[in-house]
Length: 229
Image (tube, rainbow, N blue to C red; front, side):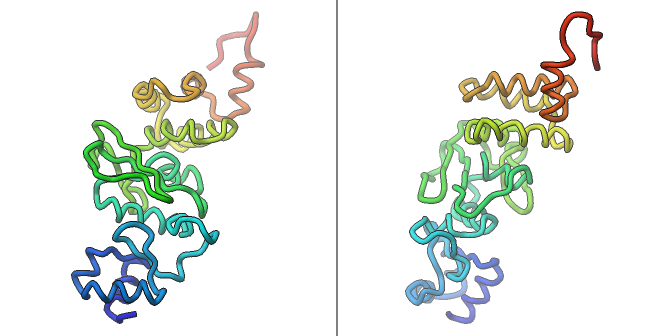
């Protein structure tokens, strides 16, 4: 690989975009690195060092990257027009560990000219701005606000796994049941929305674990019980 291009890739943590490469080397240098198997195109105009592409052969190149690199690649492709959202945002918030092979979720304004591609799902959201307070930066990544990430991720998780990130987010003081309720109000067609609302009610009552919720609903109820706080 051309030494200048190699240094640029290393500075990018194994990632380089066509726009950045063109500023320091001719286009044919990048094309040559791809032909020689030194770089792999994972998204339009986004390339990574070939030795970083692992995973299951035959899967989209983006899905064969370490999740942290895959998230950076997707944001580089979006070029400031999108933010990590849904399950990908939960990973950036530290509430759900991402795994190799996971789809990358990006939310974009409706005006953004981005479409779903192998390895990345694009969600177009009316009124979204890729700027505070709509998005924040976590671990160097542009992500949607935690409340919306939790609401968006609710139907994407198996029913048995839906409550855990919500409970943890409240327990760790990352958000509140009230703020989550506001985000839930903006998703009237959410799958199993009533269960989410019930969970928020239990958290607002002071429950802080599935066991406490179960006790609240099945043990500390009935005739003669005092009002618990």
